[in-house]
Image (tube, rainbow, N blue to C red; front, side, top):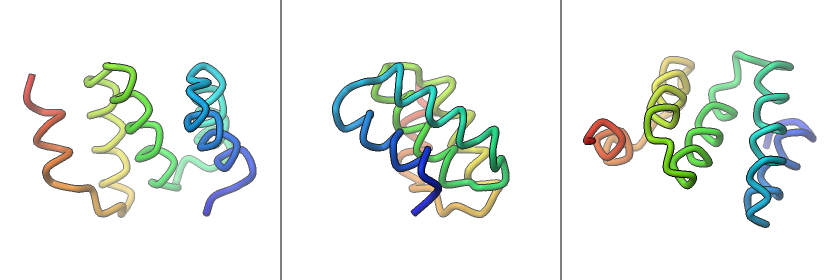
Length: 80
């Protein structure tokens, strides 16, 4: 799994501490922007918050960085 900040963000997300989770994901990306998994996980958080546009942007970025994005998830986000 990713760095300590990434692990914290996943824990915050599980606890529905969304602001803390988002801050941790942003910090993980700032520290290592080439890790597609960070964008994928932030995409999942954005989606759970109802922010499909940012979720789509992040999953596309994750895919461009080599993450195997679920085609059904992409299609869902692309459908408004």
